[in-house]
Amino acid sequence: MGKKRRRLSSSQIIILGFAAAILAGSLALMLPFATQDGSGAGFADALFTATSAVCVTGLIVQDTATYWSGFGQMVLLLLIQVGGMGVVTFTVVIGSAAGQKISLKQRSTMQEAIAAPKIGGIVKLTGRIIAMTALFEGLGALLLALPFCRELGLPQGLWYGIFHSVSAFCNAGFDLMGTRAPFSSLTAYAASPAVVLPVMALIVIGGIGFMTWMDLRDNGLRVRRWRMQSKVVLVTSGLLLLLPAVYFFFFEFAALPAGERLWGSLFQSVTARTAGFNTLDLNGMSEGGLAIMIVLMLTGGAPGSTAGGMKVTTLAVMISTALAIFRRREETHFFGRRVEEETVRSAMAILTLYLFLFFTGGLLISRLEGLPLLTCLFESASAVGTVGITLGITPQLGLLSRGILIVLMYSGRVGALTLIFAALSGDSRGNASRLPRERLMVG
Image (cartoon, rainbow, N blue to C red):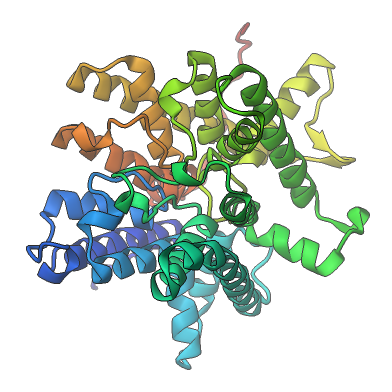
């Protein structure tokens, strides 16, 4: 008898889908007409840039506006859109539009990709998500095109509006402002509400998660009808936006005028969740400010969103679990609802894996490049959180350090649980026996 063919799990399909998109994007960026000089990018630069785009990170080794041609920028925009929506979801939706039948396996993979609570109606739900994505990105492009067109003219202004709207909504952080100064991001618009407000709104909307949109769309302001996850996402995200902004305003950027200081403080708090734009020089921040940015980058956005990181729900579960232990309560809970023990264990695994990747990556880069540890930890947090903000060291890193960042970006985008489940999917045999129990003291 022939050997039974092994089927890929949903987690493995997601991982391979992202890898295929990165490889295809790398090959496209190596084409001669993808760069301004007509010679094409080298494989190392193309791979790094494609990984950053598909993983919606924003770390770059070549300035997007001055190095890549119009074709290269369009490739990057497509990679950002595919990466933000999810490679598998994007592919299946295209197949559905072409009349292909969506299998149960594909529906299960789509459910995992967008963090949907159930598999029923997943194709219809995904179609609604695509429609709302187009709406948000279209409105964002229109709002951003208004100031850009006044400054750059109609054709270039429209292109800038579209590019930055998609990049912001997908929490990617790629920009076309290098024509002013290489790697300058949005620093020229630090005090321009016409630019920073739409960008911040797009970052937040993209980062709260597809299912949270659906909850708000279906139930409006009837808070009692919101799912527990939507409440946790909105409350935790709100606190993580407000509290750091207050700190930044009072303890960072003191030399700036009050208006620019206010917008800058709010923008840095928003962009660290995981957008990658910046409007102020982050090298001027104190070590305390950079440490807060690292925490925000590692936390990221909501499950099933365009943002990366270990997710706000993971942080919320860990804090709630700690509070339950302090109060001698047996169960973690939110808003009168109990959290399953499996969820708590998953949150612990995710936190452990992200901290391991973050610290190991930063330590290795520091040793390889001879750079300060805090600077390298900031870089590794930006990579594994798929953020993209940097203290300016990315273009100067060696090939090995760039390879570390590629691994971190990829791991951060596909997600910690996806990696764990993909690695363990082959060992699915249950074990009915249980080991003897013995008490272990901690703390």
